[in-house]
Length: 113
Length: 114
Image (cartoon, rainbow over the protein chains, first blue to last red):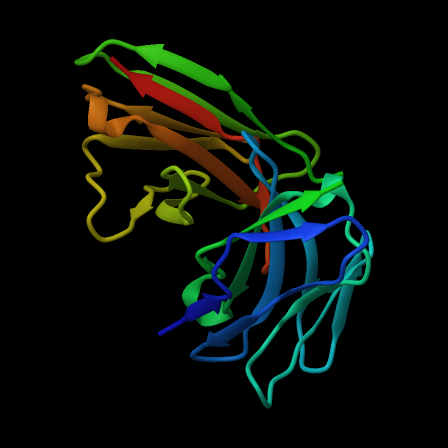
């Protein structure tokens, strides 16, 4: 089946620190990979995506590279801000499953000034 | 672009009553819409998939008679929680896709059943 395993949180960082959230997956078929962000009391926003191996998704200083050989899609940001405090979800979708999203458990990130 | 709205954003209802939640794609036509439920500090649980003009497909364990989904047009899907009970209190989130792999999420609806 399809599943996503995410680094457990919560993660607490100081402003300007480096952030990494690990994400690995298993999939039947060739998945597309996503990172979504959820701010308190809100729905999910697509942060970045990658649809094939070695693709790098990037947005707002965040990056993640689709690594087929290690089945990973780790999220990184070089210098976090207080406004990056949110819950981050790694997800995948596969054509053979009607593109339904399979989510990781989510990682809560808190950035302190 | 790719904006999805939900209405209402927050609703309180009494036990035994029904509540309807709307999900609209504002600037694209959604071939498929999804409904999720999220418990506090947890991930999203897919409840059902709806395609315009056809019956929704429910995930295992989701009561289709309790959670009625209607996908009336390419821009509107509704979720009706029938005979709501306190255990139905949750955060309900919809998403919509114009096709292929990308989903755009609504802001969510917080339902509280008293």
